[in-house]
Image (tube, rainbow, N blue to C red; front, side):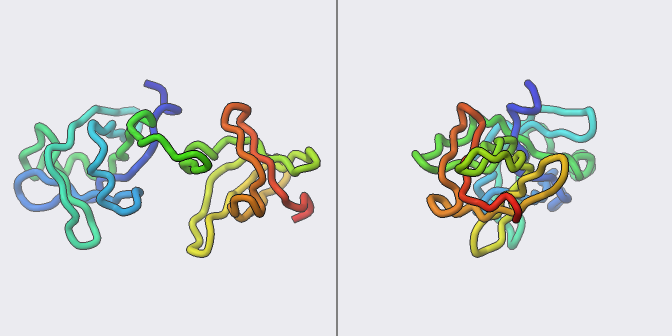
Length: 169
């Protein structure tokens, strides 16, 4: 499976108890949504392995998980620092007009008049609204992700986003 078919959803951050449970730093919202996906692909450097989630729960601000075949604290600690990835196909289908951030990364961004601004590198969650980080060879632009205001069109097939944005910003 290629890395482009995988999506990072968290990281194993520690151990929990003596029976092999691990603490998870989850990138899902809410955090415990990471429990909706199994199997996971764990990756660290060039090593990767597929694991199944047996059990899990929210524990304070963390999520704790029991992985199949991991029933010892020492084995669990060997997974600290491993990334948690899932196949993009495991995600629920997004509603019409809604997009996963992973779908937006890599899209070419152009103004309504056809001026190329660069490519979506990543997004930032600010609280008020999400912000696209658009990069080209010369600069980085921060474009508010305001659907129908700033973002005029998203065409995933063409890998293109049309924005109402001044190229000098």
